Image (cartoon, rainbow, N blue to C red; front, side, top):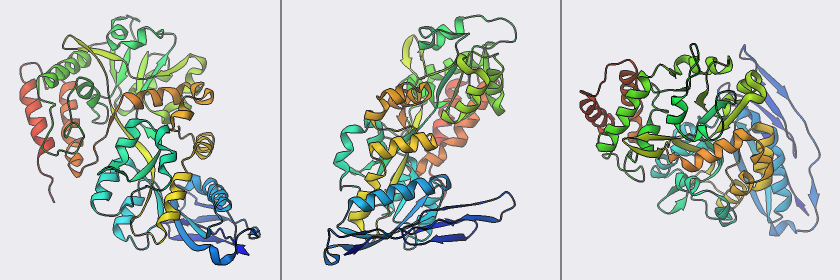
Length: 435
């Protein structure tokens, strides 16, 4: 008979502590504020099936890295996967490593790194170029028709998907229904034309934040590192369209009905009912819902009339993904599990338990997601957004763009020196990274 095993090793890599739950077990652990480790352990008997002779099953051991809040959920998912695959005799090790930590630890020592791990799509190209990722080819055809083009592009290198996307990460626009109706929200210029009186503001974003300021340039047809985000020497933020985008930013920043969302000022004014609309992501939904209740709405970014042309504002988007390391000893099983973790059932469960809005079109178009206006706004904006470039040169973008936004907002840039400042911005962005 075939004996299936599920071992959950709950390991906080930062603390160096781990708990091993026995065969067929799931559990969780965490650290308190003082840095000590608290452990909960559950065990259950191993399950045995009689339909597959032991000699026909491949012995497989897979290590999986997940964020702490997903340990129990992942244990349940991989246990179900195990039950569906009698061709494998699988042992799992589940360790706690955050989505922002996995890539660094993989680069440090790929041999001891997890076979399967979470990683932002922004790191995919670099990891692929370093030969650390296994292309996902097995079973991925089951997901491809259900994935939006932006998500597929974000994880595709050299014609192969290098990871499986499961949730978008971008910002959109929250609004107060007492200020705007749905028709007015389609145009930022229409929104800004309204007058709500002293102590009220119409719109807030973060011109001084380089993750927000790009929406005026990308929306107006400018490109960062070429059309596909891979040309380190190409940035068109200083061309004619870039000049028009910068001019629009100057006008917006100078408008007394605009509020810069620096240090959370915009969010606070929004919660107090003194601001009509603010840009933010799904992470702000709980506090905004608590503050505004039924008055709260969310929608994709509006259009703007830049240089006489109405354009759709377009920001960066990346995706949470599940990847497989290139030197896994069990590439077939690892690929299948990575795809399985993103299927409809598991993506919907992850959304219900963790709030990760599914990227799958079949779920984003379902009544359950459509009835969640925050999830719908996120998916709608993700479809309008531009995949954040993932080449190393992206490291040269953030500081110069922030400095440019600061100069716009604080009045150091005007129409007379705008072109000069844009030229300097592009030179800084495309300069060779210091090794």
